[in-house]
Structures are given as C-alpha cells and as structure tokens.
Image (cartoon, rainbow, N blue to C red; front, side, top):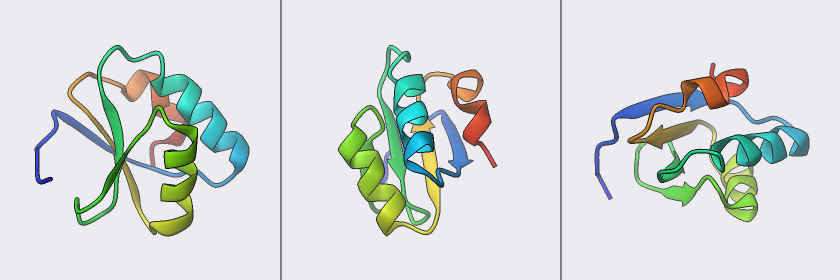
Length: 79
C-alpha cells in the first residue's frame, strides 16, 4: 500500500462536526480521497463517515491524499 499520491496534506479533525464537514467536502471531489496514517501503512476512504471517525480515533496524525487537487475543499482542516 505504498502508492504515491499527487497531493498530500496533514489535516486535523478534532470533533464529530469536523469529521462530518470533512467527509462532506471530500465527497465533492470526483476522484479517490483517502486518509492515511503518518507511516503510510494504513488508509481509509475519506468519503466514508465510519472510516474517518475510526482514523481520527486511532491515528495520532492524519494525512489526506488524492491524485486530484483538494486543498481548496479541505483548507479549513489543513495544518
């Protein structure tokens, strides 16, 4: 699962509201968007509410990755 993506942004999702807004934002992207851990060992579909909630609970650092440019959609969460 060491695939390289064109765009990678560290994001912070602190609350359930953040998770809901993040999922709503990335759902607008036509391509695949994933959340990955810092080591790039694990990833979940960012368009999945359950996946995003699991990732925020389990991983200390979150990275949104995509082949599409998504910074404008997720700028509120980029750190």
